[in-house]
Length: 401
Image (tube, rainbow, N blue to C red; front, side, top):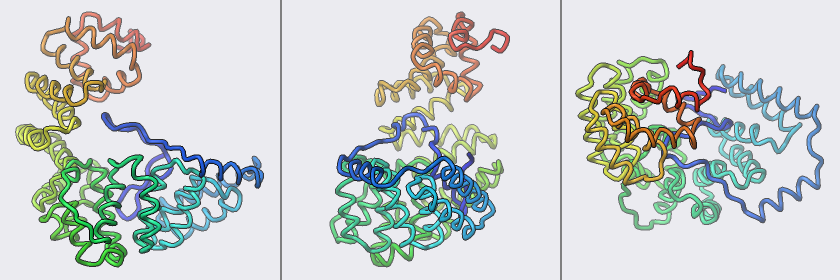
């Protein structure tokens, strides 16, 4: 199912998405008391019957269609009807919570998300959403309690870092600049700016106007925080232009973000991607060199730079970038795939051979996905004398090689 777009931003509270390379798999936590309570609830009430499940599914599908048509009120009616059949359905509860939040109905949203969290107490996404709603509703003591419970399980998640910073500012605790905010992915930056701008009134009520300004400065940087509306507008234009395949418009928006001082890794990486796509390869390569210089301990930066260097025939630079990525993430199979490709392209097929063999043996699905992601990887495999054997290990017929 395609993600939905509400207010210019993508929302996808329902479906699992493929994780990008170097991002750990979705975290799962199990809290005995909550699990026991959920089991107790199941014993108290019978599970939905097949006809009830069917009715709920129909309401859910109609809600999705209404969201696509931007008929949020009608979508909410469908979700409420669906919940009468399956009141513990996480899909219905999560989407109802998301749409209530988008509509400014924060109390309703908190109610839906709290029920979602009761059904799936191990769901960190639900936990972060609920904590964010509690902060915006100025239910600070409850938010602190939830943070105490969930934050130790995934401190590195951007949402937990954001909520912790909000709570520290509310409590007037000492806060210092955190370099992690400069390492956010593009998707995380979209979410962060969405919170800071779209929820600015609720956050300002909870934190105070000065603390909200400080929150923007600490997360986006002083220059970017100085003109949040313009920054938000440029980011919306970038998201829309990128999704529409309008490279020139997206690149213009990316330049606006750079001029405004938004310098997180994800934004700069996308800027470099758009430069390359527009034909400005020298500028793109220079930007990647600067990105890796500015984020020397970020594995993803070196992995992405290595792919760009390979694609542009800079094999020596690619090998140097891969070596640094391997130092930072020695067990990451994507790095070994890049290394095998770089070795093959540089003529060192004997060195590439054991890496390819191990990858197709242990990671065949990932191998095929990586291989198909960029023509440079197919070109690298073409250099291998045993390409046919490798492809057969992937169960690809010779006539399709």
